[in-house]
Image (cartoon, rainbow, N blue to C red):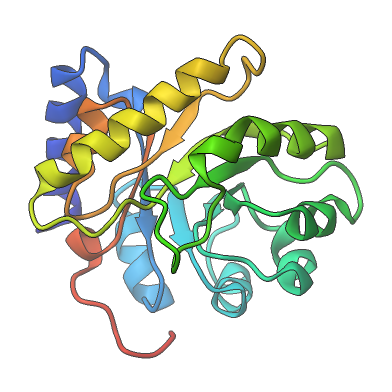
Length: 221
């Protein structure tokens, strides 16, 4: 695949869901990719990129254009929060009080966050349980976090359709809490194997790496 093909498929899926392509933010997940590979996509006009390792992000930021919007999409250790807080546009993986407290520390208001939901309730994955979401949003907002929406990584699908029920359930969770938390709007869901299904189910942010950059390296950039 390629960036251009991904964007064409994003537009088609958005239209199927009754939205414009501009309603969906594509985060090009650039983990393990070199600055040169990132620049190749940047030069096509793209500005939203995602990293999942704090050490990798802080190495890339100084050598790449400062108008890139960096999304942190992986699990973040609380003791690493300070190192990326100042360069992160949106943190996709808020899921525990210790991280929330660490994210609040520093000069000025912290960047906005998404609450990560373990929609498949898989023991090996991060994220709050669906049954604990309301409670979790409450403590996040009480801390002063700007919670913009929800994020999930569903069980690995055999077919793209396997993810549909999980994406729909995340959307329904968002809808259920909308009355009490109207600012929680975004749905970050869908990756290379299922992003079109995610868009059809209401994703406003998708996280795509392999379909844009090709196979990943086994080590960091």
